[in-house]
Amino acid sequence: MRTHIKRITSIADEITTFLLLENFSKLSITIEPKGKVTVLHFISENNPMTQKQLDEILQVLNQPRQIELETYYWTLLGESGTDMSLNVVGRMIDTADGYIENGSVVLELSREEIE
Amino acid sequence: MVLFNRLKKPLPNRLRVTLLFYFPLICFIGVIIANDPLAFENFIKIQLSPAILLTDYLEIGGIAATLINVGLIALMNILLFYFLKLPYTGLMFAAFFTIFGFSFLGMTLVNLIPIYLGGLLYSRYAKIKFRSIIMLSVFAGTLGPVVSHLIFGYGFTGVLAWTLGISVGIILGFFVIPIARHLLKFHDGFNLYNIGFASGIIGIVFVSVMKSLGYPTERVVLLYQSHNSIILALLFISCFYLMTVGYFAEEELIKKWKLILPISGRAISDFTEPAGFGATLFNMGIVGLMGTGLVLGFGGVVNGFMLAAIFTIIGFGAFGKHPKNIWPIFTGAIISSLLLGLPLNATTTLGSILFATTLVPIAGVYGPGWGIVAGFLHVFVVRQVGDFHGGLNLYNNGFAGGLVAGVLIIIIQTLKGGEK
Image 1 (cartoon, rainbow over the protein chains, first blue to last red):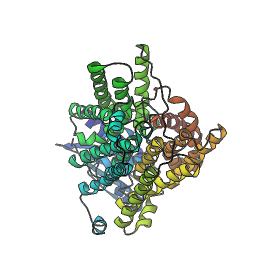
Image 2: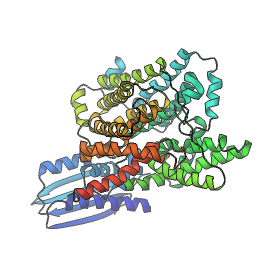
Image 3: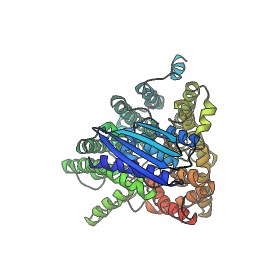
Image 4: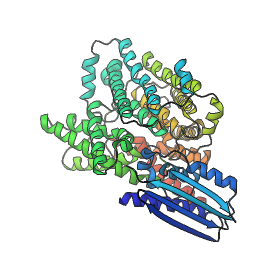
C-alpha cells in the first residue's frame, strides 16, 4: 500500500514539475481515490500550452500500461519533467484525458491499483 | 511466408514471444553440426565451473557443450515468458538477449535457478505477480558467479557448499530487485545496465565479507582465442533473422525505423511502442551487425566474451540503443583505448568498447560530444573496478557505467547551468 501511495505522489510530482516548466497563474491538483482507481486532476490556469503540445503529451501519456516496466522504473519519476519521464508516467496510468479551456490546461489521469 | 504475412496483422503477444524459439533452436543445430562426442561431459563441466569473470565457456567446454548451455537457458526463459503470459516489450528483448549472451560467459542453469527462486520469493513477499519482476530476475543472473563460486570455487565441499551457494543465490535474487530499483536514482536512468551497477555494489559487499572471513576471490582469464565458423554463423544468422522478420513484419519498415533514431535511449525507451514490432527487430539486427563489424574490423576473435557483448547490444536494440546514439560511445571508447595503448584487437579492449554502449542515453540526451566523453571515461573506469567485486558481477561494465553516468550527468548539468 505504501508503495502504491508513493507511486501516486511520484506521478503527481512528475506532472506538476512538467506543468511548472510553463508560465501559469495558478496550479490546482486534486487526487481522488475511487476504490481501486485513483484519479489525478490538474488545472493549470493561464497556461500558454497549445492544443498541438497537449495532444503530443496525451499521446505519450496514453501509451499502454506496462506493469513490468512500472515495477522497476517508477523511482525515476519526479526528477526532470521531461518527455522521457512522461513516458514513465504513461506506463503507470490507465487513461489520460485533457483539454484547454479559457486558457487553462486541464489534465485528468486515472490509475487502477493492480499487482 | 504465411507466418511473416501473419506478423503484419495484430498478433497475440504470446505468439510473438514464440519467435524467440529460433534462438535455442539454432544453438541445438550448432550442437549437432559441432558433433562433439564429449559434449555432454563438457556441459557438466560448465555447470560445475566457478563461473567467475572471465570464464569463457567456449574455452573450458568447447562449442557443443556451450551451445547446450546457451540453448537450455534460452529455452527455460522463453518458456517462463510464455507461461507467465508476458507481453513482448523492449525490456523483454533486452533481458532475453542479455542472458542469451552471458550464457557463453558465466551463466549456467545451476547458478541462475536460485536467483530466479529469490525473485519468486520477493514477488510473494511484496505481494506482486512474479511476471511483474521476472525480467529483473533474468537480469539478476549477473550474480550467478556468486552462486557457482560458493559451490565450486571457495573450497567448501558437499552439502555445505550447495547449501551456501543456493541459499545465498536466493537471498541475492530477493534483494537485488529493491536495491537495483533504488540505485536507478544514482544515475537517473542514464546507465542502461542498471542491474550491473547494483550487482557491482552487492558484489563489493559480498567479496569484502568473504575476504574478511579468509576466503579471497581470485579473478581468472579463460578466453577462447580461435575463430570458429559455427559461432560466426550463429551471430550473423541471428542478426539477419531479426532483420528479416522485421522486414516482413512491417510494411513501412524504414519509415518506422526512423522513428527510433531521435529517441534518446534513456530509461524508459521501449522502441516497440513508438516504432512497432518489425522496426524494433530490424534495429536489433542493425546494432548487432555494428557490434560484430567493430570486432571483426579490428581483427578481434568472436569468443564468449564478444558474444555476451554483442547479444547484449542486440537486446538493448529494443530498449535504448540505435546507431545514432551508439557511434559517439564507440568513438570515445576507441579514442581512450588508443590513448592507453591498448591493442584494439584484444578481447578485453573490444569488450570495453562494446559494453560502453550502456551509456548511450548520455549521447542521446546531451548530444554526441558528451557521448564521446562518456565512452572515453568508461574505458578508464571499467579497467579498474572489476577487482572491487572480484569478478563476481558479470555485468562489470554496467557497474562502471553506473559510476561514470552518476558523476558525468552531474557535471554536464552543472556546466549547463541546470535544465529548464
